[in-house]
Image 1 (cartoon, rainbow, N blue to C red):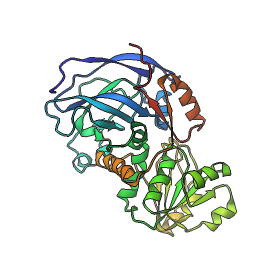
Image 2 (cartoon, rainbow, N blue to C red):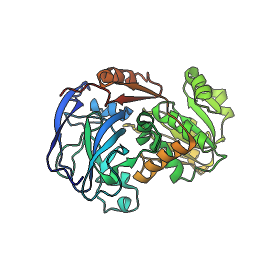
Image 3 (cartoon, rainbow, N blue to C red):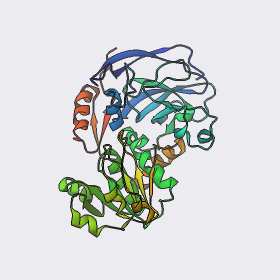
Image 4 (cartoon, rainbow, N blue to C red):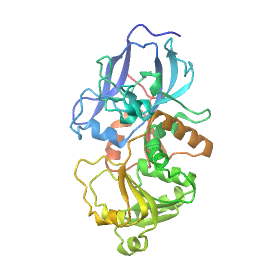
Length: 357
């Protein structure tokens, strides 16, 4: 065991410019230190935020960039001070792999809100090296930012929980919305939205999927088990649903009006924003004031919550709806994701893909 003294050369698939086209890229991993875990990547989920990053839609991209932050792999070697993991274990890595460890969010187990958090890719690690994500053969990660995959859970099923899953689980936990009997709304039925239905139903909530058309009604009600389906463009349906929901998880990643959805909330209801939107959202204040309603946001989840959602899915015997692909299909997968043509999460079989040597 012990720490690994030499750099390791690995191959991944990287975007090299804002075209977002991924191609093979060889680079070296940092030295594996005493607290580090060396992980052979098995699979990695594709998140909508990967699309934003590879195309520089947020204006913060650095190239070459190996995306991927829903990483599942096998522990190959551990540093001399690692006490949480053993060689051969199945583990996961999510959206961040570092933080300052001394600010209030860090010491209160909310490290995702650390202002010095280090993203799993498109960032710079403590040692000055660029971070690269999970569409690669291996990673080196500090044990603090690694979670254990429950025994019996497949890598492909675990991957989407490391971002999409914990993203919906965290606000339900933080805002005290885990008790059974609540009435919840899921706005948008994509990768995160379908996770929201799964988690909320498993908590015993009455779940209403809210969408802009009838297109996903059958999927929502019959495949995912939602209780109701509400078409936001249908004025009569929306009026009947006024004051009916305790919370709404809003997963829409583009600008949209908030007033129609605020009207659906009960007294003290919460509209929880999760979509990354770079334009201002508008609402009129009486909609909040006259119902003591809250517009809030939530960002991924802590390492503790990430482990909790993995264990929750195992306990409840839940599964995600995924499409498994190989790395040679990854550019096509991103094209389809941009058109919302996936039900509901792509997972890349990295270990089963041919990587150039």
